[in-house]
Image 1 (tube, one colour):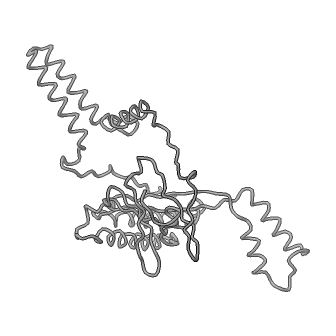
Image 2 (cartoon, one colour; image 1 turned 90 degrees about the vertical axis):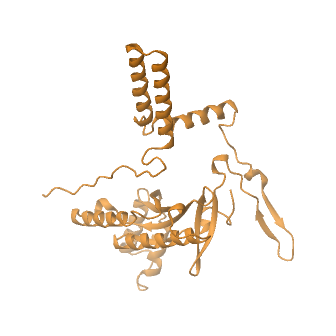
Image 3 (cartoon, helix red, strand yellow; image 1 turned 180 degrees about the vertical axis):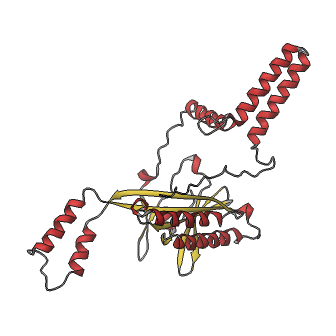
Length: 301
């Protein structure tokens, strides 16, 4: 049997004013070099040079040596924020929206209006936008004052492990083409989300009732009884898989300028990804609406 093809993802590309280095890494290295110069100025000797060398090595390690997939400059803000929340006793968050209830708008046709959502500070600035698309609507998640825009596609995929090796190789190759098509584009992130829940066997029973031969009674025949028994037996082990794909773009990478340029770019790239997924034998059910992205009408968090 021929060796299976393997795929290896390269490091995440980083772009910034300092090239591939982050601002935190540059700050750590700058502080380390400053400390080295101060040590050598205060003690211009072999001992001072040794101490300065150790400080330089420590600065490089703090800036580039990952610990738990993060370097020291990345762990620093997280640790400081955690300590500040502990000291201010704001580590836990409890939303006040459930206790506010709903409001009834009086009039000829009274309407129930939900109260404004109460979100934690970490979600401040997140907005759910309602974007027209054809005859429907698309829910778009806006973050960082509209810099990051995210749309979500609902997909359905046949179990990959049940396919023969040739079909698996073909799907992996086509998925690779989908990823490569997003290179050098405003697409910032592509994320798969999967949720597994117990299957609803009522749908199978309804299908049996509607699609059976009318000449065959619904109960009493061995064939129908065995099928119903099979449904009740598999209900304990069958599950439904909900697969979502989030597509996020960085509006600063969009070449066109204008108020709606970033939104058009998000819709265009989402359409291209949907076409690529269909070519990779992934069924795209459609994009989530604002209500599916966040229950309730479009609102600002």
